[in-house]
Image (cartoon, rainbow, N blue to C red; front, side, top):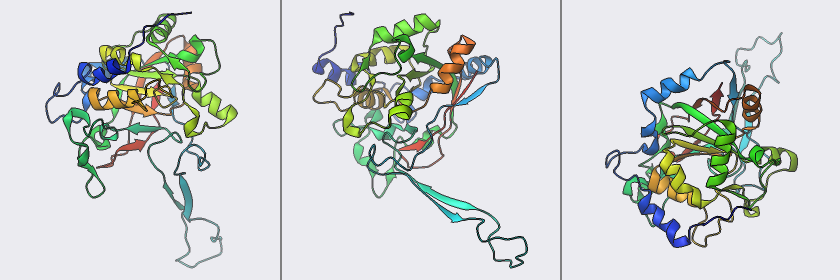
Length: 315
């Protein structure tokens, strides 16, 4: 068994200083780690397309998630074709369909992007802005999701951690560590580099489809807080997981989610929660390559703290 020297809670608290990107791209910066995605990185990503295979990486939105999150997505029809018939000549009869949907952006029920205004620590968010800038009246006045209105196109790297551990999935409360990340890199013949999107498969979507959603209080599989310096050192632009990023319980009394808190507040790291990498993992295994062009295109929704997503990998 690997013996790991894990950081104390005080050392994890110190990450807010040692891993900080505040001011790195200017005092007014709202893009954080998206600044690491250069034109050269986008060209590199485009050159990785060999087969032209496009794979969506989102879970289906479910309206049956009451057990997993406090606000269940709603979906109802506004216009339907039920009243229309071929011999009806009334002009007012609806000849189109339409519907309405609404959802809480955050939580375990759907694939979504966390904008940099999503997390606070001691009254501050990314780049030292006060959390009071996020308000009922003004919405998200700093670090909102429309900062990614031009989308993300970069090199994506999938690390199949469940496959590396030879399990169907990580169980709730089971963590991945730096040695797991580096072992997966070595086994898959890839290296996570600056500006890359890092995709982590814990097998959490497979578990969900086979066993159903885990209640919010039931724990999560994910990264241990000790991975944060590694993420910072590698300079990833986006972290995407098929879980909600960090292991829960975290092992630290003061942290509900250190990957979220330190990653977003200190590092300015954009997060994709609850992705589905099952089809992508199978395609990568068949192709024998785990890097590809990866795109993220959130809704251009000013003053919003996040967006539902369907990230796309193109091999």
